[in-house]
Length: 284
Image (tube, rainbow, N blue to C red):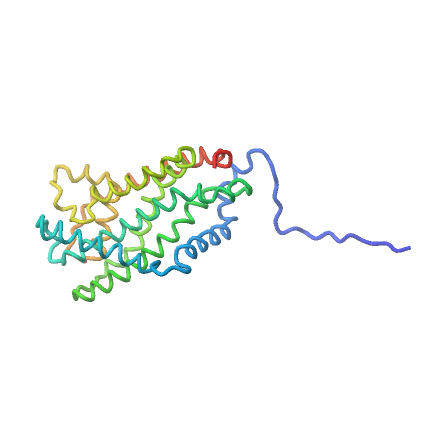
């Protein structure tokens, strides 16, 4: 007689389907699905740059042309002052860096859920991974723009100072400022598809009400605190404080107001996204 023994080996991972478990372990699941985050981020980067002629060039052409236009309109025609002795193109580009990071994350994340409809309807994972992974492309574009700013600063013989060490903190603040409203608009875009037409308008409007082409120091003192409730004001002022040395003054009350606005929008965006994500699979 031939007998056989079944060898039982311990599993490295066990998936338990239990009511309410996904809610209780949501943030732990995000860490567990970090490989999926990396795959989605790499896929978006590959789609953007693979087999394209103007892919990387577009990340240079767009901010360069915007810098030229803003320098001519605000610096030459409107005669608005720069920050101290900083060349106007450098001041503009230092403000454009966080703005393009913000607008790219907003645009990419807002359409990410609809673009991954097949994945959402078939597999469970924390949906928050999709819009956050789409921000990876914006970070690559940001690094390209940062190198371009370095070239411009070398051209004008304008080296950075020790304050540039604080730049990562303001980069993180810019990402948080973008993800808050982006998560809210992502959820709305799943339910109301015409939101994809509204998002570019909001981004374009924000460009002109934020101090990208001009210094926020031109705002009258009695209005500057209230103007700083725009979360991108504190981010842009922080970038200029880091990159322009002592030429750009740091308005602390306005920065605190912008930081509070960033945290409030991020909290609201995450909360609204979490409250509606269970319905995404049915609506996409």
